[in-house]
Image 1 (cartoon, rainbow, N blue to C red):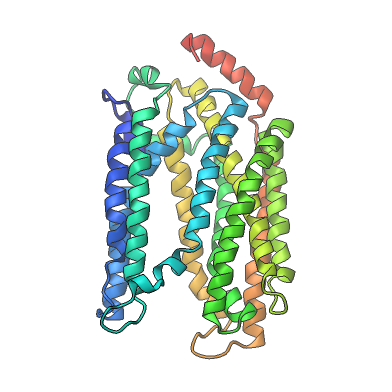
Image 2: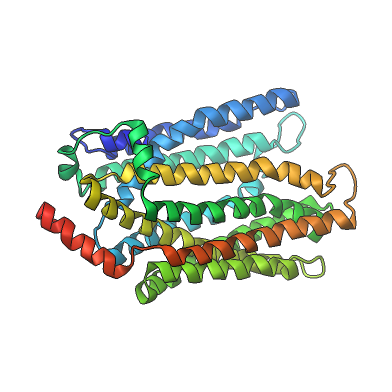
Amino acid sequence: FGWLSDNTRSRWGRRRPYVLFGSILSGLALPCMFMASSSWGSSAILAFMVISAIVYAPIISAYNMPYQSLGAELTPEYHERTSIMSWKAVTQKIAGMLVGYGLWFATLPWFNDPATGRPDVARGAMWAGAICGAIMIVSGVSNFVFVHERYYARAQAQDRVGFLEMFRDTFSCKPFLLLLAIALVYAVPSGLAGGLNFYVIAYYVFPGNVTDAGRIIGAGGVAYGACGLAGIPAAAWLSRWLGKPKALTVVLLAGLVGFASAWWLYTPEAPWLSVVCSGLNGMAATGLWVILPSMCADVVDFDEVSSGQRREGAYASTFSWVLKLGWSASALVMGPLLQMTGFDARMPQSAYTLQSMRVLFTVTPVAALLVAALSVHFFPLTQARMVEIRVELEARRGAV
């Protein structure tokens, strides 16, 4: 869909038609993902989960990829791009704080089975999905109506690019490859840590007490979002003061400290300290997702100098694809790694199992973030270089 939006020509632009129809379809389809019945067998429920996720993935991409591309072309100014990504991050963090209580909402008495009186989590999740879907539709329609495409007049005159050519060109852009590597090195270990978070809290911090674990996880989600909100102006300030590459290095090192602190803050003696760790990680993660997309927008300008084309969709979609590849890889390996620790949900966990889970949870992301922070040193698009690129592009176009 990133490729399609780059090559679309319509009276409404390249991105906005996809944002409109993609948001409506995504919002309507979201609650359908939770329509599995408790009367089904485990195999049928698993099949429903897999198939519905496969069907929903391209629907949400139809909305998300053009939306991300639209954000990258809103302004040509170096620091204003970071400001835009900051406001976007504010919205994401507020949403993340609400999502942290998704399980709590789905277990409210309103959704209990009327026949048995027992909680019907799937029904509660379906209603949560319906509320979120409505918000998606409203936001998509708002973007279609109120946001305009700065470079559409320029893009109308450029040649359409083939799908494989898009991949070839994006993967041959060296500054973009470096950003991809940093994002991937962050995504895989942090995704693994995110998946292990439940197990460390439920089996180490609260041995076998899923109810208390859920309460702490919910509070951790709020702390993650709240501290993430606090981290947004800090990341924007760092970017203006140090430039984006150095600011990204600081953010990655802050994330390293946050993940390392989990070794001491995830403790049965003081369970609420895990909420502090979640807050630290939220602040660092927000800074990362404020600065990295802003740097990707700079890459699009760098690409236009050599190719003569505006291809926000190509870079946004490739970036998202690599991130999803990393998160999928982390999800794929989490189960086998958990088994290697000796984990068995049917019995109490051994001291060796708990210790091994804690090592995976802390050491893996710390090592990865150290590599990512060192890699930023080689990113060539500094503020001075981007000023030169903007002057050259405006001389060609005769317009911002």
